[in-house]
Structures are given as structure tokens and as C-alpha cells.
Length: 106
Image 1 (spheres, rainbow, N blue to C red):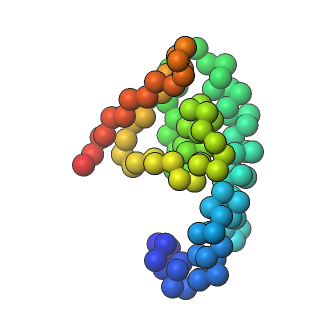
Image 2 (cartoon, one colour):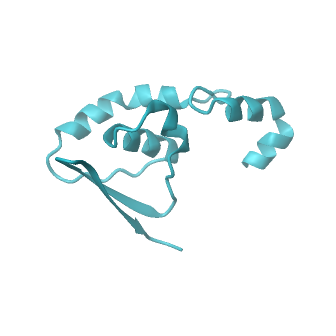
């Protein structure tokens, strides 16, 4: 369903999500906080890697990973811009995260 369809057909769910995207859990789904918890072992493995790693995933997962490595606050995670069809290269440096974005499609 699109967000417009959810707004029309399930207004209470739409309102609850809009009120608190971080903690909102879709029926039979998961919240951003659930995703973050599920990613903890993945983050540990990513931190161990010394060679480049490519992560291809859903936007919620990518937002959570990006927020962790870019040291972004928890409350910002649902609102981080994560454009489709884009490679986001991040490198950990002395001054923090260095980022480059490569748009694959217009």
C-alpha cells in the first residue's frame, strides 16, 4: 500500500506512524527500534571488516546503519534522506565520516 492508501484506509495507523516514526510498529511489522536491535550483530561484523563492504538493503535498514556510522542521533534515523538508486560511500576518518554519493539513475 502507498502512504496515501494507508492514510485513506487505515487513518489510525497513519496517524500513529506520523506521530512517532521511530517507535511506530506496523501491524505484524517492526519499528525502527526493532530494526536497530536486529542490526547489532551486523554492525559488530561490519566494524571488524578491513576491506570495503557493500550493503544493499531496504531504506529503514540503510538509515539505521548510516546513522550508526555517521554518529547521528536516534531521533533522526527515520528522517535521514536515503535516496533510491544511489550508492553512498562512507569512509571512517580521523575527522569523522567522509561521504560520497553516486546517483545511478535520474
